[in-house]
Amino acid sequence: MIMKTSTFILSITTASLLPSMLLNVAIADEQRFSWQGKLEAGYLYDSNVTVRELDTTTNESDQAVQLKGSVSLKWNPWANLNLNTGVNHSETLYQSQDEFDLAITTIHGDLSYDFSEITVGVSRHDATADLADQAFMDYQQDALYLARLWGTRWYTRVAVQNIEKSFNQVPDRNATAEAIVGDVYWFTPSAKSFVMLGYTYHDETATNPELSYQEPQYRLTWQSQTSGWGGEHTWQIHLQWQQRDYLAPMQILDGSTREEQRLTARAQWDIPLTSGFKFTPSIEYVDNQSNFADVDYDETLAGIRLSYTF
Image 1 (cartoon, rainbow, N blue to C red):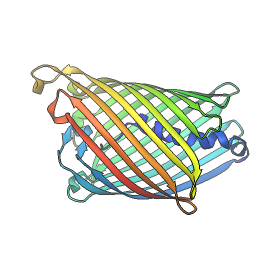
Image 2 (cartoon, one colour):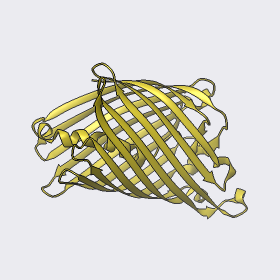
Image 3 (cartoon, one colour):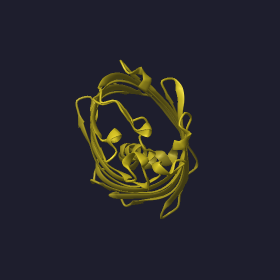
């Protein structure tokens, strides 16, 4: 639970932004510099507090307060060149199991050029995570991507990622990884609803060979916006399935190799309130099956949050 993969985060972020991008292309062309901030506060119920990166499952539930703040900047020095950068910080503070309190700070940058037929871009994400007020993990991701909007109905994006993970207290989990990511979006004529199909192949090499693995990931997202009380309501359903095959035998498994299958299902509803405010209930279910008993578990996360965008 500690660090969702960057692929998942980027998929959700891109999915949320694309409809407004399609509806405001003309405005974006004229606007050379813009910025946006967001503050969030929420409540989370976690049926099974886990730290996936440490193979830790408590089999105990807890409640938490979640806080988040972000600032993003966009600059168009000329029409076809785009620079996006920003920083966000989030905290999850558990009521009883404060040894799992988590703080994550992420700085990101994206530089892209829109040619007549295709957009070419590079991006960088740097994240640091603290667990129980102690330095836990550093994460860096560099990516090269190609993207294209086909008319007004189809959008495709392909990226190659280079990833580095460093664990302050468990250096045998330090790892490098390569990933190939592909997403295809189909939009309704109004561009307010879409379906996204995504695929990632992740190949990770850890300091401890028992923790090196290869993993295909499959993603499906549906999102729709409708006008109603208070403004635009947004519904989103996201499904993700992962098959993680570890490459080296584990001593604890009597020489067998470790295997995992992970299904994630998430739904959320953005409800507009007064200007700039949204109320968002969400629920997520994770079914992580493995022949390694420590990570054979399921988890349900239900939350509500209030956000203000400025």
